[in-house]
Length: 408
Image: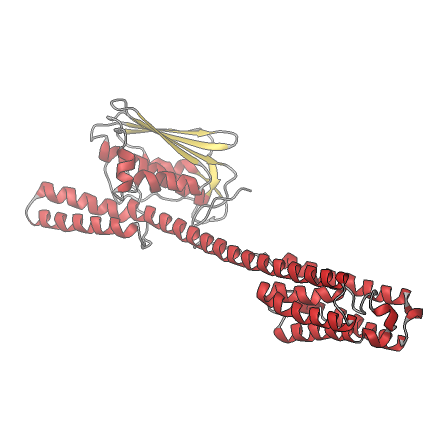
């Protein structure tokens, strides 16, 4: 199954902050009005507005929960409540105090503008801040210095927040796309390993045997070679899932499948030793602990497949007479499997060249598998002295098929 991409909106903290701001500024406006109740010329007008403001703010809290619930209709109504409070301030307050006192909604008005900014970005913020500025200037009657400063502050702050929201949304989309690409790439690599371990190996064997036998078999081998080359090219762009057929590297058998004695318990730990037992043969020695070497079933199968890929490289590149040794070590925190041969070794730069040619034996079937398990694969080769592949898997790995390894 492809890796699922988990997304969390970066806007969620902003909406929560806006909801808190609206409640706190509503309480501040009502408290400020209560302290100067005796100064109002028409206190009933102020009381009526504060009652509307209280009910509206609490009733519309679900509306400022996210962008979907904060509709254009709500934004328009919310801005209307703010503008109404600013414009009816001269009705409730004395003319002498209008020039230097706060409006009825006070700083609650900025919350209506910020809602526009979070919903639609800096352009929406500029559109909402403009009528607020005009209403404040109309309420004051003249452009006083403190009024102009406050309006510019609201204008700049709301547009800045709107711009930050737009950048955050663009970054979120980019991150989500990157995670999707990474998940698709990992799934493609996993399927490529299966193809390499199964179909490509069979086609390569048919090509070699056909060339030896000759006649009609030679033509069949030639066709198999062409299909192998085409499939290798396909693997790098869009692999097709196939079943893996592990090999016995010593005997050269291609279709000898590894038997899983724990198939009836897919969720429990399994012993790695029975999965590696088919790898032993006349020229492959297997050394393992006397006690079970337990790993989660998917991890054990992937590790056994990586060992099979390493032995297949021995059979193909070290020669028919080469010997191989498998050593299984059960460490306190990890399982270590070492595959060593007495072949001619790997020339310097050969691995990089093979990977560039689309040959995925080491890059995907070995290193890719161990990377997905959260482990590592270290390859040491000295020309003329053989090759050693050390595979390490942490015991805490839970699963590795189709996504990054996780720890318990």
